[in-house]
Image 1 (cartoon, rainbow, N blue to C red):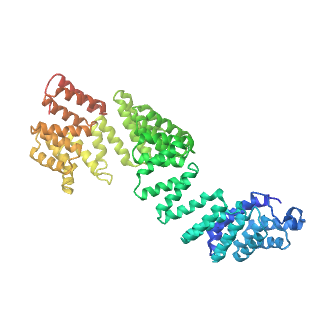
Image 2 (image 1 turned 90 degrees about the vertical axis):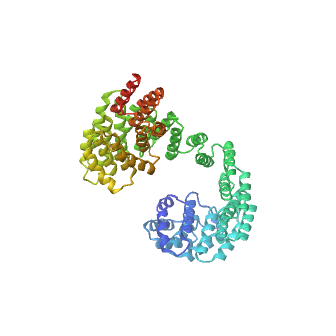
Image 3 (image 1 turned 120 degrees about the vertical axis):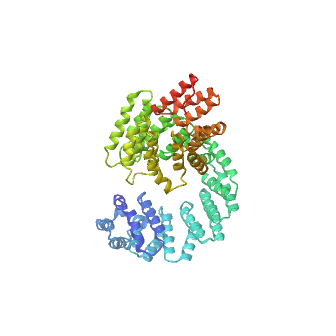
Length: 610
């Protein structure tokens, strides 16, 4: 027989399966899946039939009959399933029969809703004896009976098949009948079919035991299920690790979680290439925050398993958490080579790793590679400006790159202005270009972009320029709108604390209230501590400023305040240490100069200005 026609027509079968589901009122999803297996099985091997000697083979028949077969294939291809079924039935009526013809006739009869006729064809076919197609044909026949509400007949047929058909042909039928009794929650029949199938088909008896175990599990019969699963797993642990996974679920549900980790570790030590258990073990290590143990397991999965982008990302994240930056970079570079859809995410992560290694130039290289359309683009632009300014501390030439980066961003009309503004403000703050920052903020003061944070920033700039009239005009509405906002209270209180003619009573009242509302805020700790210092309460001030400095080591004002208190307490060495450490974290050249000036005053043992 020529197989080209069969293969040619199989291409559209998968679509045909789903389009017919809505046309027939039966258990169609399973039925069509089974029929597809039937078609594929027939196409994958030559047709054989025990009775082929008593009737003409397809190859030996005349041209007319062979032409009729190919005519049926063409009709099937064009969607005329009734015509295809009619042509194939003519061949069967003339005793021109083989597995492929019977299979296609059944298929087309089902497609046109002739379920009873299709059942009759299969019954006739199965009555002729065993063929290579007997197992899928029996499965389809039983499914058709079920779709016709002939459940008892289907069950009797399946039982007969299991008892009489050769062992190599009963696995699919055994599993079908097992699943049928599982759906009915018929434990007695379920045990009976599993016992018979296990006796007749010892090669697949563990598959039948698995069906029983999963049914027990679903019905919350955990103790019985565990015994069956344990038996399956102990027989072939490498092949049946799924039984261990289900046992672990039972231990989880029965408050025996302590058993899971040990069981997975024991299995993994014997079968390191079992990726299913390796993944479960890695998840447990991660849940327990045991990153040192999780890493080698995940490395093993990455080495033996298929390429998995998410796994490699998680592995790189673990390396970063363990400060193994070289390994993280190696994994991320592997991702960069293989994955073209997530380049921007990988570049962003690599830039972050290089920043943590204090390799700013390498970080810049990856930040520059991020495309404007990427979700990481604005973050990358902001990080580039910060990196340029950090490099400018030791080499002023980098400042021009920061300026260029901001300028190029403002030329992109599709980007948010607020993001551009934040970058510009950061740049002005680092360079202490107060007037430029004020101009930038005043431009949006009347717009919806002007947030409370922008208001606080602009007010602090007015305060720095000692423009207290504008400061008060800006902050009075904010205080009226929210008289218990700790950030607003803190800024007004600190302003009066630093003014030459400031109201210290008002400062104390506002700062005390701010501290009571937000005692964990490092900025408020600094302000309240500085107030206590000015009131002569040095020990109380020191405790607060130590906390603030620990939380904000990069804040020059906090460092200067703490150093001043330490100096007044005659702890000169400690004051110098605070300022020297601050020099390594503060990025603004303006703030660095202030710290250097304070250090020089300490060296000369001159009292510093408050």
